[in-house]
Length: 186
Image: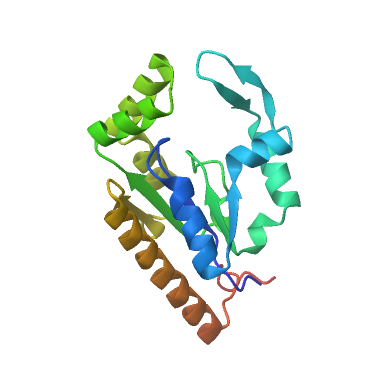
């Protein structure tokens, strides 16, 4: 039985996923799980893509590594640019961070992204690819879209998610449904 929720913070690179996740972990005691770090540390990849300067993720290895790390038991803030990979039963809230295209361009340019990677991420944000992915992969009631253009917005987002966590814990302690799954016989 889970006593703490699992939250995915997703969005295109540069929207503030890691900043949000680290701040929430500090404030709530939940564990920040950087999927990029897991991919590197546990070698959940099939090599390096030079054009996009990123690992080619082996999703099966990644899920196995996350399962070994006991992510599904709760208490994790999962930070990654995708969300459809994670089983719905593991996740209680999906936060999709969004930024305007000018802000995103500036953030990605400052990271020295190659032009192809920069353009792909801008296109993804403009076309709402990750928001649609979240809505198609999870119950829409657990998918929240938040804007992350400024530090004030980031602070407000963290406050809102922290309040949600407190309410989730209260609700699940009150009704004994600490696994989030209802009466599943387990």
